[in-house]
Image (cartoon, rainbow, N blue to C red; front, side):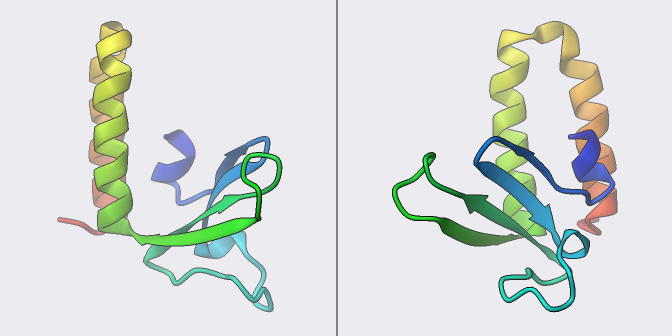
Amino acid sequence: MNEFKNQTGFGVDCIRILFYRDFEDWEKYRCKENEVALIMDYPAVEVDTIGYLDFAQFYGFLVNESQRYTEQYPEKHDNINNLLKEIYIEFGLN
């Protein structure tokens, strides 16, 4: 989430979340400035896949996943909530 508050992409193995500035100008599948691109490549999926979420949709996803995460790691609740607040402001959702 530290990367997301700076609108910087992040990925693990064959699954990535990228922001507008993570792409080169010429790239065909570049997302819009207020979107993230969700990219999954083989072998995570049978066929390479890309989808787009606007910041509000992506933020909702982060909130849901954060709730699940802090149920397992309650000691990280305050840190996660602070990061969510920073992301909310950075995404211009206020």
